[in-house]
Image (cartoon, rainbow, N blue to C red):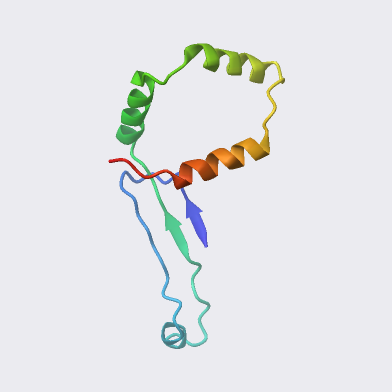
Length: 97
């Protein structure tokens, strides 16, 4: 199964192949096609999200600049345990509308 998140289409497209036994027996002797899916986000959506993020009151320029300098100097260390905890914590939060 292939998933392409960088498609050129502005709307999400999801394609699946029928892998049921009946579908496989309908074309004996043929090699089944590979399953694939393509997801994309239009540039308008990206621009909107970027604008919202930049206008957020949570944007902390001082921390961002310190991180940029740390990364540029090769001194930024990723702590996998903290990243995993943050991801799990986000996945447990209710989705707001």
